[in-house]
Image 1 (cartoon, helix red, strand yellow):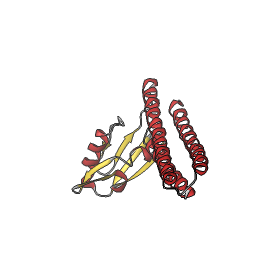
Image 2: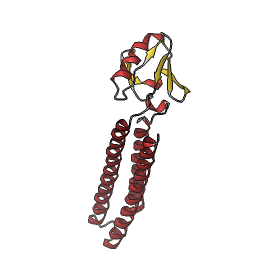
Image 3: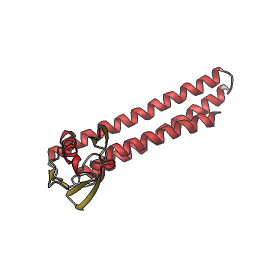
Image 4: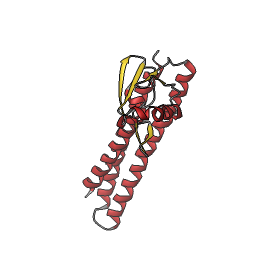
Length: 185
């Protein structure tokens, strides 16, 4: 029973770490990467969908992304979506392909991005701590219903805290890597 609760919480913590990784991929570091734009939502065909479901994204040069829509009629919608995003990039189009030059980052912009990374990392830590709280509630409910003993609850709480510390450490490491990547000139 305790193992089931801990396993479920660990899976959810792993998902929180994965979500943070995915989120941080969208923060640009001065190098072109399809992850920068693939999650931008484009209004096309009467619905909203991610850019990577409407076009092919390529990196022909280190500071250039090319976006080739599968249907040329949605080029305008893709350009609008890129301009609306918080990336600060300006697309240029020739009617068939969109070129997205990635400018070098200024020192001030690097610091802004580093602060953004810190905020997202803190949100990840909070998510993991919330999962710990949920796990504690489940364990205490098991003890209240006399399904586990008080000693088992105590040991389970220690295991849950170790798990939480482990995932908070993972989140911190991911944040430090992204910070280093952003500050790299």
